[in-house]
Length: 118
Image 1 (cartoon, rainbow, N blue to C red):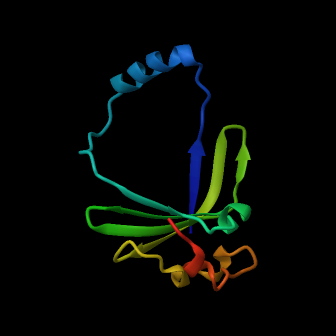
Image 2: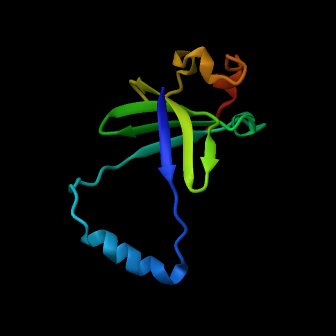
Image 3: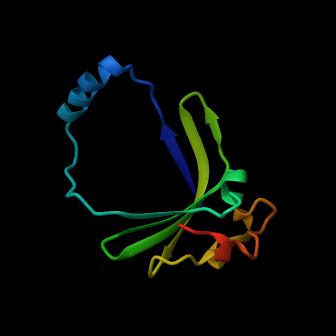
């Protein structure tokens, strides 16, 4: 399990351009653009959202990863939540590969694979 950490800031609208220009002056590694595939899933009854969970498949350059994000916490602008990442060979759900602890009651519903849709 990994811990996702995001730090979010509020920027006044009239400062956004100046901030963008400043960030572009900072040195950093250059990375070639990569085409990402992102598929987000939910059930018709919003089971994932109702359990503060997110399910995604992300792919790039022929590699795919299935991710389940579960409830975390927010303090100020700091967002933290556990996430489980599983390498997969193609962009198809393989929910049985997640550990049992990913589910809110220690398991995922047996019907989730059939009900989760992009």
